[in-house]
Length: 412
Image (cartoon, rainbow, N blue to C red; front, side, top):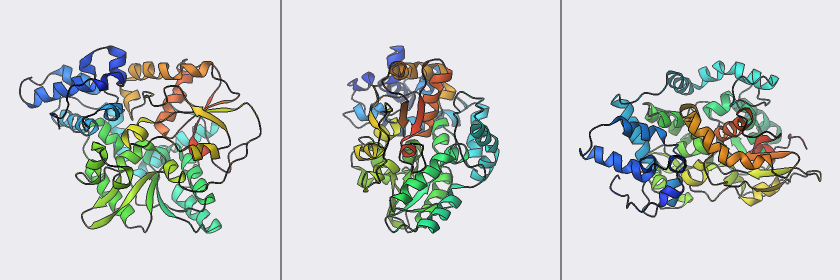
């Protein structure tokens, strides 16, 4: 895979760290050359190689720009894991603890109960937290079962990945997802034995990803559903990698369309369950339209990297955005990275802030009252909210998941 780069340089124009530094070693082309030289023994293991690897956001914009279809994301994942395994780098202790908790959903949900309460009370001790109304005790699985019995939809059958951080801290987004799906006659099932998708472990180069993938294959393949839907683009990308060498390789090499990749599979199941972004799935349904009062509200839509560059989707369907009832438009630089990068904004906060500064500046003068920044990934929502506490945006604005704009219980 390291030899597939043709050194054309198209990746330089879209790489956020190259744009910040002007250092070609801090670009996909530069990193690939460093990794190859080390692999071929022409360069001894060097701390600079580790530093440039850690500096990568992992936004995968380079994959969209690459004419040679270099599977950069897969190479980056393997390289980070190799660096950790060889002791050349180590994830910060707090992030290793967080990854260990995320792999045990019941424990993570319990540990994050104070965070859910603080969000309900509007007490926000961290720059990435924002106010919301997550259920304190009721799980998404219980809530979905309750609404299914009340409304008894008869349409497509889907399983919902609740996610670890989403369920533990931002559970109201999961509840809104259930409401929107059921309102649109979609049957929703939430397997209680599902686990973390493994995205955090991938970002940090940690072990345990295969075990998490095995757990989710068993949980979701046991259901008779049309697809698995995800309301987090990062989790959707990670879940689609559940089996290396089959659908995952197709996804990462981006040579075949969505219908042939991003599936949960195992060697015993010849008919893997497709993994779909929930908004992309809703774009194929006849949606209930939200009626908004005529006002000056304006929605600016940002497209998560792992949606367009990772899952290779064109974006969020216009029919879904129109159904919100709001005036909307794509945010400036909507296809560029916001700097969240999974855990990148925790590991490289200065870089992440500078990347966000370029994207968020428009909010200071954006037309609309209120101004709403909408996206489809909870980690991106955290990053966008930090623009307020970091002083990058000084005027009032709110950040919403697009599914929340479709929510029948949302405020008019």
